[in-house]
Length: 138
Image 1 (cartoon, helix red, strand yellow):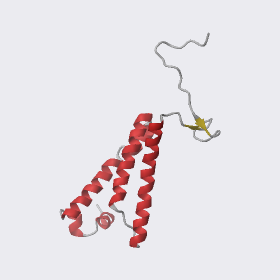
Image 2 (cartoon, rainbow, N blue to C red):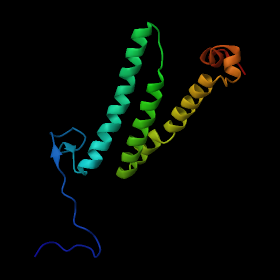
Image 3 (cartoon, helix red, strand yellow):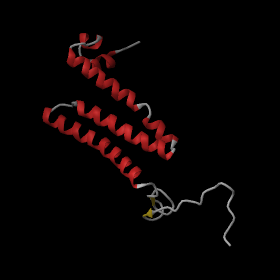
Image 4 (cartoon, rainbow, N blue to C red):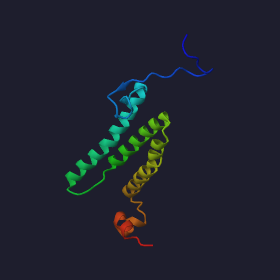
């Protein structure tokens, strides 16, 4: 007869482990989550990586540092996917790392939309918004 389990507790989940000691877990990398969640997390990481690739290509083409609209869309997609994965994993550090990001990305998309419609704010009237922030002295 095996060891007794507390009433109402499920048996421990078997982990699929890849790699050796020192790679994330003592026995290697933990791949025990469902394939759907693993794919969701990997897609979030891919979206986050691709935003830098898009920004780099756009900057090279313009021969200047630019941040295209696609950068903000990919940032938002990556944040939502990775936040969902973090909530699923119940990882408070990971959740807090991605939770506020969506606000910044959405705000930038709103500002881009307003500028395209000609609804510029104070920063548009005074010139470059980034330069205005750098010149700001309280």
